[in-house]
Image 1 (cartoon, rainbow, N blue to C red):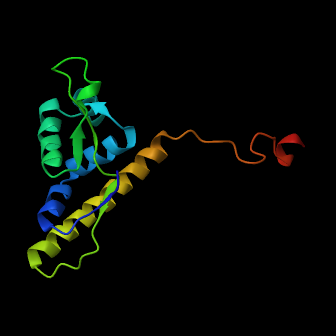
Image 2 (spheres, rainbow, N blue to C red):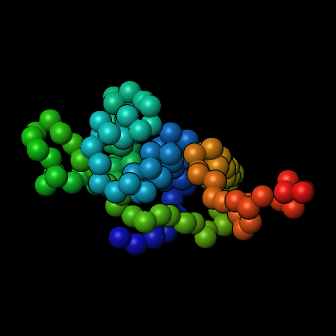
Length: 138
């Protein structure tokens, strides 16, 4: 897998969808997974997840992993790229708007991931935090 260069504004529109961005991000982090498990982890309807996965697959961002399926009803998917970037300076107003929407959604996604990390992390004791303070012992 390699980083994917995006020069097509229509691809930016696909990625600017918040649900798809979260879906791809989760899929990238956890690796191959069933559609049912993705739906569970995203707290979303499996039909909704399947729809957005089809959109991502249609544009080459994800791929099926049929060798992991136990039967014909189970669908496994994985990221087909490690990420994407666009260094192109779009001149078309619609393309600029697509780029801005994608960048905005990316910032929102990163902020939400940081907020979730802060909410769920286990605090570690700091140096000296387990020792009683001098005021407490006198």
